[in-house]
Length: 516
Image (cartoon, rainbow, N blue to C red):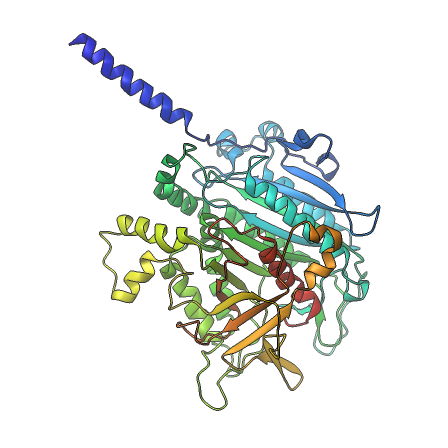
């Protein structure tokens, strides 16, 4: 009997040992936090691991012209399984300057350095934030980290080729509040001449099990963790960015139409469960922007305000039902077009506040996600069949919410190059349904570096409404796009050069067209 108990105990111990060996720790990978820009880690090709634990990496990469270089800075901010910064577990609720010096905040360090860039009136900042998904983290050699570095290098390269006539601050836009009276001249300020490219990688424990096949059992656990992260201190990060954006709207150069060039442009990208983190933490801000002014005027509302210039969700592991409140608010602002003559499409054109992209070959969100949701919602009683589908399906696969389709082409033919039309002195959405075919301008900008990525996209066709979209013919600033595998292949093929090209064109659209 004793021998059998000993054998059972040994077996259980071995199982625990094997399980622990296949677990990824909940640790902060970026422990070296630079308190000033001068102390940031300088990346080196000769010593790739020099920035292995750095929370701030400074990269210099070859430019297009021989002997030239372009640079970007990459910050890392990490959260634990409860959504708290890792240093919070050490500091607790106490205010202890000595401990804070030993364990500096990644959020404070990143925002302080961005603020320092903006303190120089000759500079503007393009900030790109990426939140990774399932099976990833902020480790130095993680696939997503490496791909994000390459993406930031391409952004820096493209920015270096924008003509000075376009302005260092990415063009102009109307601001929510203008610090000058309608009849009084706006304040003058120094015109910025330099553009800094900054990336911010949001890390969390997306990977817990590392053993093949077994790691997929972490679906429910990691989805729950992503929801806790979304309710945690990532909201502080976005809230402080909002404050920083508002601060940079003072002391700008205005023209006669009270338009100015903001000195901070922010783009937030989330993938898979990381898209869930981004969406849940920013959904209320989106609703606030979309309903802004709806009940204050009898005329058509102006463009929805934004503090984040664009939110991009890629293959999002987000239930369609979670998207419903934002979509309802969006439809209030931009009415669904009908087949009347002429169509009821009067709102002014506005670049998307949020663009959702789901690959047609993403089996993880098409098949695996609904199966996982079926088990976790077996006791949920939705109101009607449609709500039941929306509870189980992701936003990218629910026909009630898909608005656009994106594919590549070799020939634009006679298709319009833009999704808007001129109405008087302003721009309005093209009449629904529409197709816009845009030539790949990024390929020519990127020069020799671009050829190494192997992008085969000559042009992109974005279709709104039509036969491929059985869902709503919504014509407004919230896009939910079904994407050809030629741009995004499967769930994790988000770093394909074709899709990167399209994202870069979408971001630089604000530079080329004053449509905000």
